[in-house]
Length: 582
Ligand code: DGT
Ligand code: CA
Ligand code: CA
Ligand code: ZN
Image 1 (tube, protein in one colour):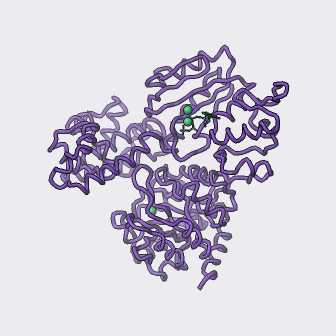
Image 2 (image 1 turned 30 degrees about the horizontal axis):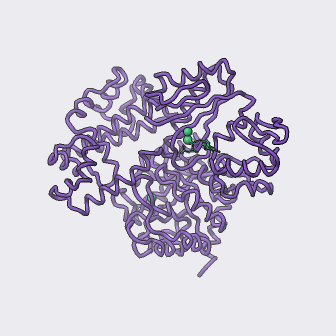
Image 3 (image 1 turned 30 degrees about the vertical axis):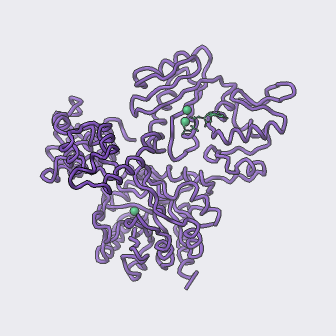
């Protein structure tokens, strides 16, 4: 899918947009144009050079004369001169901070001007020493907010978001699998368990003893590694050239593949518990195999399945291995068949160019039909209170319903459902009338403002609306950027249950909201969950697998997830809501 060239170019255009935003109001239009071009390029189905060769660059949305020239320059020379100049004209290192809350371009500009600061660490120091609060327009409150922003951001500086780690890990494993010496290769550690943040990327490889050297030297070569942290005969640790993050490689024999994979998948807590239970049964388990204690005879090691089986356990999917009761469940033979990508029949949250999405509804429908085996999608643009997202008022909602009807007619099936992501107002009412909502197929209600107070009652009230089918990103957190608002999740789950309202597992990488633990609580109370990508551009649709992994970590099977059902069954569930309470 996303070729390297597109990714690099998209990153440069985002940087240019950031620089233009820093430069100020005069360059606002350029900032917007480059940001749009970056998005368009990151979601192209083909490598950008294909469009250059067929002279169709300018047919792409958001690509005009000047941007097309820069694309050509980049493809031909590998650099964009304008970008290099721009970078030198601003304190570029500081601009990386703009993604942190409280560090807007105008604030950074004022700090740079007043304190002559161009380095991130100097800025942090000045902030801690109280120099920044003295700048005009800053003050104690703002600088405290900046410190909080920095602290939150640390979580994603020290650990990777799952999605980023998956991209890096899958690329790496792809490269390693191409080596002829490699017999087996898999991701292990927290990445195989799909934890929401990842400390380092663990790789396990099986190969013959004589081939280890070759594999280690590829892994530590300058093609892959920026630095080498450790290098031995069977293992190595490096800092990846691409992402600056750590990756650990371990090489074993085929005979030990299963026991090594089991060990290095973790979690540590799961392994310790398993080891204790094994001991009680007379076995010793290690990365080298499963052994009988009495005569040290090896009884398993080649496959994970055989190890669990020999110990009297059902196979436990990696996502469940957190010592949250999965071993007890497995001993009873009660591990559920977890939901998987194949079970998903549709996506119920996405934004079109009617609000803040990139593509038209028709483009979205065609893209999804081409790339996914879905039966339906729901277009859920923002409602009018979300002004910066160009939210829809009642008139535009009804226009959109008409447009969706005519698209479905052209498609020859009712693939596109008319929906909305309606704003929950501060008092828990919605910003669109019931009369309009009642005409839509799918209504998700979300909070997009008022993050500083307890939002429990607000969400409960939204659940009680007869037309709300789902609560979107219920906790409101943005990993590394915004704490979840205060929320009594137990009370929300209870209300969702009583009103037959579903809760969303939003699959945006920095949201993952509900998270695994909250989704687990909801599942235990038999509240229905919806896995949505909340797509704003076509590349986002691939996030579905991220959402599925959260559901798997919550032990969900397909019966727990609404969008594994056929549309007519969903309709039956929806009807139940309007009849369930007065
Ligand atoms: P991370 O990297 O912080 O996201 O988390 P993990 O789980 O990937 O941890 P990591 O990379 O330190 O180790 C990879 C796996 O190796 C871990 O999941 C289980 C295994 N492991 C590491 N240290 C120990 C240990 O002291 N005891 C046991 N039983 N297993 C360990
Ligand atoms: Ca790890
Ligand atoms: Ca590791
Ligand atoms: Zn939203």
